[in-house]
Image 1 (cartoon, rainbow, N blue to C red):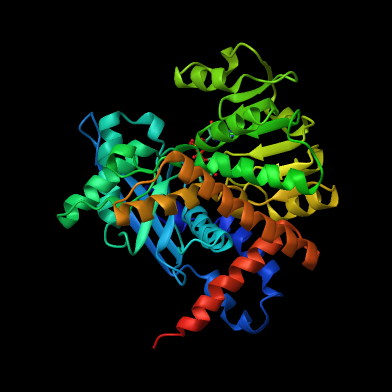
Image 2: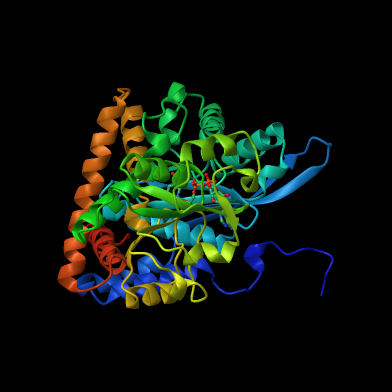
Length: 427
Ligand code: NAD
């Protein structure tokens, strides 16, 4: 055996990881598929997987190679849609699961997209600006054969942002000899981005939290909120909750955990973070061990970092009333069962964090029609789509006596499989 070469992650037989979680979630919904059950297998196999090698010339002259992926899970309801993640732990299993969750999310919320996701296995924090740009452009050109405004539309995810979307849009446009703003969403405003996109996911988390709280008769004002992840999603959700009179009492990031029962000033925390200062030096909260974060009593707990954070190891310790999944796939199925037994209501990722893709849909529509909306228009349409979808989901879950997650998967799988059924099987 040749031990000189490090195998890429997709060749390491270490279990199916997050994809396994997705499969189990599909299984839980399959019983309710009725006559569409004959098509369920479709959801257990991504339609298309592209694995690319991304060579990048580093500043020191060396050439580094990174694994890149684009997975289109299902396109029965429309073109693929889903973010691009740059992270050192990205695996094919993860990107497959994330693409599957995008199919479900887009169907739950009712936007006319299928599910897709992309990623590069790289730690972008260790790259210079120039290296990051070369990485982004090469990755875009490699996946350029499968993306496009009517094929598959990428967006930001963990460690990717407006600037990276601008480079992606530019690279794709150069490849096609025409400016194509609708090929990615989450772009800067000056390049066809949408007003309200930056805060949309966090705002959607809040809209769902407010609606769920109303259903259980719990006021948002004065509520205690704990947030894991203070990036795009966590920061915006925190601001919305604070504006509504709640207080954020604990925040965990990759750097550690801070806690203040009287409430953390989230605007100051964002400024502190933006200035590149260490979390532990933030004045106005005490540092606590990471494991203690899950035990802090709250009304709302928002995981908004990465997947598989709530497992059998910590689910039993959680003391909250409503968990709003800002992150994708933060809870394992076993942990889900523990939370349900303990009476904790989980508003699943496929609805809770759908605000981002909803405004991405708005951005795509605006780019295609070359007519741009005001921020108020964007926010009120977001509010309406999310609130309506949430209310329908809550009623469906109550009626079927299942969790919101199972209700969401059931509804979404039915919508996707109905589209598949109507289109028929080719040839
Ligand atoms: P981001 O990169 O802006 O922020 C991620 C945050 O998580 C950072 O504060 C980071 O410190 C923290 N974090 C990372 N690893 C951690 C760890 N091991 N423990 C604790 N904290 C950790 O990313 P984002 O865009 O806010 O995305 C967060 C999650 O939300 C992801 O699961 C993503 O898929 C999901 N999501 C994002 C969007 C979007 O519009 N950005 C939309 C839908 C879902």
